[in-house]
Length: 393
Ligand code: HEM
Image (tube, rainbow, N blue to C red):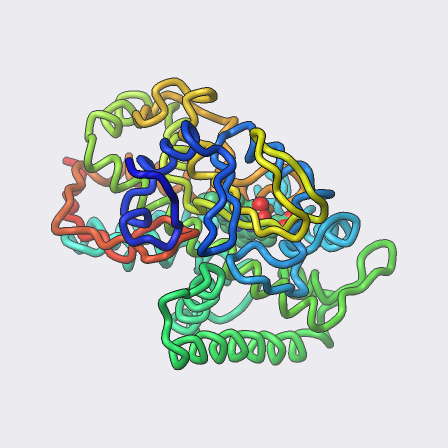
């Protein structure tokens, strides 16, 4: 592999893993002059940077462009801790147990749908709608705006990636839909506010002052809602689509789970490790620092490659092999440190119920055409995954 790494290069987006190997082996703290970014790729370095928020700050946003936003994902402790405390209790395994039955039902109905259809696009019919429906119900927002949620989410995620190839008109379009998204939530919040004290949905929780009497500003509530809807959607969609794709390429892995359903959790962790739904996010340095012998100046944009860390042979044996039984719980697909994914248990719960229904109802699933990868430098997933499904005999 020739030297260099550019996250926006279409060849890298198609298959980043050989490029990550080059980075880890040849340039573990790589500087891309054209993009003016530093790139960390080894498991140890990425994890250490994620934990060290005093140097590697989130305050200019986690995307490519410097974009400070009033969202906890773009705050450092202690401000970040204050915001996170407000919702953290809702996303623990214990708190989420009350949603188990409903998620089981939604996953079951969606799997019935694909089995009934026979030939479907797995992203359209399952991987896309499942997480949207779950989070929409938790927020108690109507599903009739689902097409808008998808468009808004897609555009927000595109903006995160920097949309470097976009025309000014396309950029404007992206910005406008983000505003549209925020305005819609502002209306929902205003309607919800009078009865918020008695309601149990996530939006009412954000409106109510917490036990210490602290309340969020309106702009913070809107941003929180946008974050919850966006953060949980495309990521979980990617987990489902990437893992399903891998299992269709190597059916022996799915056979292991069919023979031993206790491997379901391990399969999901391996799916997260092998093809991380978020490949990399950014930090900005608050002071000069050194990584792997290279000095990073203060004020630099640093890309932290979760996707590469999860394929580091120093951490994972034969990392380029997908092994359903591996159970690599130390992967960092959900990040690490103060910003570790708030929705990790929810995503796992959705995936577990999904696997349960697939095991029960699907006898065979095969690729039925060329999948289309999402064109995003930060997120790895599928826009299209055509499959043929046969029911269990
Ligand atoms: C497979 C699915 C998912 C993956 C791979 C994933 C991945 C991540 C990662 C890597 C981060 C850390 C960002 C950083 O380091 O700056 C993160 C943060 C976050 N995730 Fe997830 N996520 C998933 C699902 C969800 C779900 C279902 C929700 C909620 C509905 C959610 C909500 C959040 C929030 C609110 C944050 C920000 C946490 C903070 O700043 O403290 N995620 N996620």
